[in-house]
Length: 294
Ligand code: GRG
View 1 (cartoon, rainbow, N blue to C red):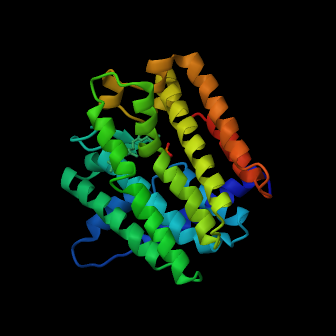
View 2: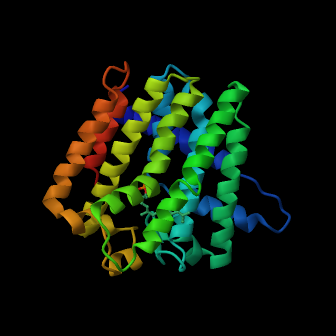
């Protein structure tokens, strides 16, 4: 299978599994919360994080199917973070993934609850994974909690809110982004390996290194795309980020230096997997992200 065929097949399977995990009609008067969760979760994101979970599972010799609950759990957490990040009390955005944000399409309280519901459903989905030994499932649940939690993505969001309206140093920005964006990407790499039963410290470290470098390259590319604007603004932020002076990589380093840095980090992500057989898909994935248009 070529890279793009594999990507298409993975995304289709992830979307089908996500739809299944979130399909519940109770008829008891609270179906609206499922509608709101599905509205955001099935809105056609890139599915980068779950694709990475499946790819690392394959790289470590596992069956990708076994990693699907963790792939979907991670995408649920990612979607919850987007819903909450878009709220008026955070970034106050009107559009996400090309359509009205959850709180615009529904209402604020429903969006808060849809985010909460997705975060909770993620842990239920992960804990119910079948066909792996209980130790591996526990390790995966712990990875999800650690990387999404208060020493992980939430910490990144706290630093981000604290950095509004002021310049921060490059080191501070690196830390912020390594937490805010990097944590879920590192989680994706580690989850895939762990779902395959891998406990080899060197492989796990290489996977995390790939996630770390990819996360920073991805964020820098995201900042570049925000600046370049044009057609890519379709469905992206229109709120505080776009309006305010904010410390971003291009603001601190300039566009040209950012492009060079994103390329260097992509090379380092690829190099992290040197010597691991079957790294072709993840190599192409890293390279495709620096050239992406959304
Ligand atoms: C509110 C708990 C809480 C956390 C918020 C991750 C995050 C922290 C906020 C999301 C907003 C944002 C712009 C984060 C930077 C990372 C990033 C570029 C997210 C968008 O990820 P993509 O491009 O989105 O993978 P799709 O829609 O393709 O899934």
